[in-house]
Length: 144
Image 1 (cartoon, rainbow, N blue to C red):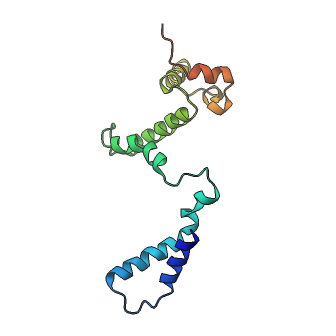
Image 2: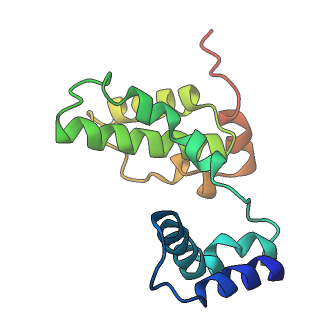
Image 3: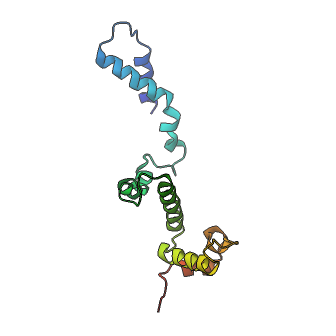
């Protein structure tokens, strides 16, 4: 890495008064590289940080590709609803919960509460659930 930094800095130390277009483009790229070097090389100091953002990009693939197919794609309320639902489902996925099971129980609770959200949401928040409920909600709902 030090060799790369040295070559970048050597190039940027040159006289740029008579650069051609390709050299000017190179200069802009290297200036950007220098300005963002700390963020671009963070994975070296912290091995748990991935070198790329592929997982993050894949996690939003469905919402991005489907956005024109969702009900009222041009309306603000539907885009806000879609964003909330994707956020909720991603949280369920991260906690290894079955989204269908969780959503069905939540909607049943809303129906039992005259169509309103339950006053106490703690039984639906994975970080507040006990191990038994987490295990139960990780399985498909037994509807028989």
